[in-house]
Structure formats: C-alpha cells, structure tokens
Image (tube, rainbow, N blue to C red; front, side, top):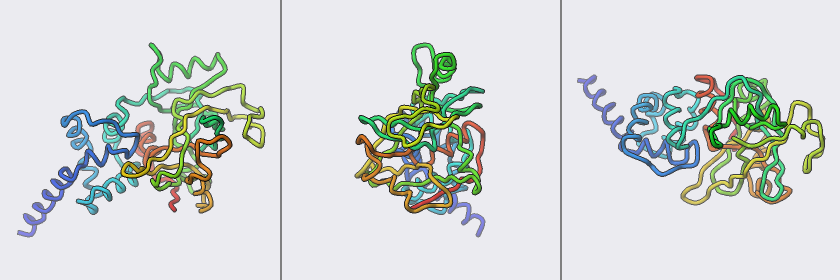
Length: 289
C-alpha cells in the first residue's frame, strides 16, 4: 500500500514537472538568449533527454517553475552531455562547434575597457580544444577562420573552462549578478583578436598587455530588466570579494566609453559548455551577493 502510494506520488510529481513547463523553464533565457519555440516535438525531445536528470536533481522544488529554473542553473555541471546538447541547440538555434588542437583566445575571465560601444578585452592565449557557436562565414566555420588566423596575425575567441575556477587554489570564481537590468557584460564568443597587441600598450589599459595575452573586440550585452530580467555570471577573484560585485552594476558596467566591464554569460553557461567540451565537470568556485 505504501509503495503504491509512493509510486503514485512520484508519477504525479513527474507529471507536474512537465505540466509546470519544464521546456519553458529550460529555454526561457536560462542559458542563452531565448528564441521562439519551434515545435512541441522538439520540446518533448528535450523533456525526454533531461526529465529523469531534472527529477533526480531538483524534484524537491516542484511544482515551482521559478525554483526549478534556478535549481537547474545551479546544477548545470551535473547534467549529462546529451541533455545539455539538446538544450543549448534549442536555445541557440544551432549546434556548437569544437575546435580541436588549435591556438585560441580564452576571454572567459577577461577584464574589458569600453570604447564607442565596443568592449576591448585582455584575453589569454591558449592551445588545445575549445568550443564555440559555429559563426559560419561562407564555406568556413569558426574553427577554420581561427586556423587561418595563424598565418594572418589574428585569432578568434572561443571557450574552455578556466582552470582558475575549478579549484579553490586557482584564485578564481564565478560571480552571479542578479537580473535587475542594471549592468552589462562583454560577450566574447567569436570575437576577433589582434596578435599585434601582445606586449604592447593598448588604449584604456594602465599596463602593457603581457606576453601570452591578446586584445579581443567583443560586443556588449546589457542585462535584461522587467519581466524578461535575467541574471548573468562573470569571473572574479577567489576567495569571494564582495566589492567585486560592483562590476554587476550600471555605475561601472555600462556600454559608455571609459567603463570597465567583464566578460560574462547567462547563468549556467560556463559549466554547460564545459560539459559539452570535456564531459561532466566538477563543482566550480562560486560567489553570490
């Protein structure tokens, strides 16, 4: 009797999971800017791919869709590659591309200066595997464009998980900025970077760009406000420094010339892309207001 009752409650809760709008919770701006829903079949495909994982990780918050969304964001690194791949593909409208064994610019933890509405970010030069939206240019995708840059004095900004946030000894952490619409961040995926900037003085930076770093130009994303408010994450120092949250605020993080902003992305992106690139990832250092 007790088992039957328990099974019944579990089935009912799982039904609420779908009925409460799992597909909407996963797709309404959680990872990447939302796009229009395509079809019920695609939504159900995501539910089929992710439903059991969401149930095991977040069943305790049902049927509250808001808490469900927050729970999935917090546990993004624990989702399987298959689940995340479907969600990101749905959100971005296209699959992500892995660039294998290339030199690339890693801007995930970069500080940027704003000039005329564009962020110029001081990024690290890395070599290995990285991931990006494909950004097709004619018959070339982002990986081919980046490879061509080796002989043409430029490179492209793509992503891998920064080592600094994966260990308490790494000195870096993910800072979560609230979605109150008051800040902005640089979105550097696919940004073009200039090899000539290494070991030079660049406008807006107090010190010369260090060897092994490069300046990339990146568009600026303003935080959404109102009903579409969406939090985002930037990388900063660890142990957590409360004063660093000033880079979440309009007084500092704006698109105005002379402002200082950091590279960021909607909540959960860093771990989600790391899973697609490397498989499951462990916990990262996190700081919250």
